[in-house]
Image 1 (cartoon, one colour):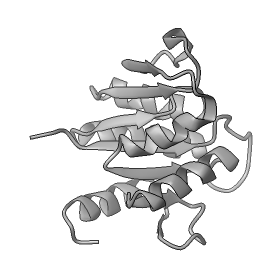
Image 2 (cartoon, helix red, strand yellow; image 1 turned 120 degrees about the vertical axis):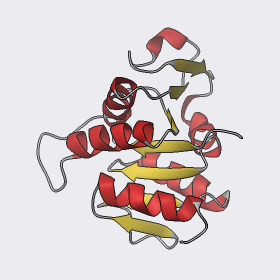
Image 3 (cartoon, one colour; image 1 turned 90 degrees about the vertical axis):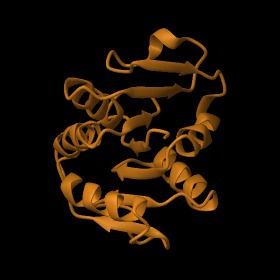
Image 4 (cartoon, helix red, strand yellow; image 1 turned 30 degrees about the vertical axis):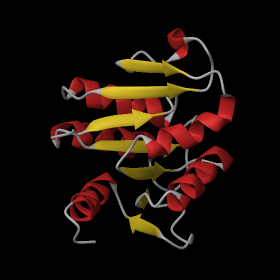
Length: 158
């Protein structure tokens, strides 16, 4: 049986202040993904990606970083499996295609492109307190709510 993979997308840089605390939510999301026994896929760099990877690894989970550049050493230190692509932002498609579902946690244009790719590919997208005005994106109020929705999606109940 193959392992479930969840693609985590979001802000490459964490804002100092604002609505939802992206750092806390990304950390909680990473931990919950690992505790569920799932693998975490992300873009392998900073911000939401690094925080989710750090907490997933601390919880014993596996992390996969699909990098925009051609040097695996550019991955954040918590990526267990760095994948160098050398294709820049086009790697966003690879990030979402390698997950069974996608969770967005903040972000800007790069995250928006990943959401578009995911929806076009038929991947379910759950968004924590963001992007929920996009048709097809499932709103979650927190990482805990996102995990509950992911479990329902993967069980075919949502």
